[in-house]
Image (cartoon, rainbow, N blue to C red):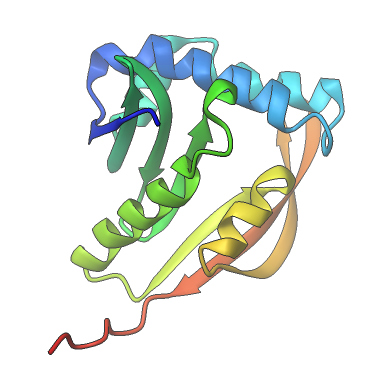
Length: 163
């Protein structure tokens, strides 16, 4: 089993994470979104400097395997999962679940009582398995193309007291 190293985002990660983002969108979203929709969505990472500035907001965590970026997730603002992406080569290793757990911990530490996310159709299962529930549906436009996504949330009630 491959060991995963977790660390905060560093500005030098931006090019690799932009590539990971584009690959994940193009491959994982193929069953739920047309090619034009995926291309419009993936275009958000074409400018790696702007993408890096976006990643520098809030809490962005990076998972490394064998020295390369395997996944990343962002909490921005303190109670909203803004991004969650896994490299296609690292699928089905539990990285999405591990990222969501870490982001939830950061949200709890910031005093959040609910964790929210705007979730692509291809990621609903991962969020549902982490305890999120659908609260609505919306359509957003990216480069003139409409994309459907779901608003999801997870109440962060008090943690059980350990005895």
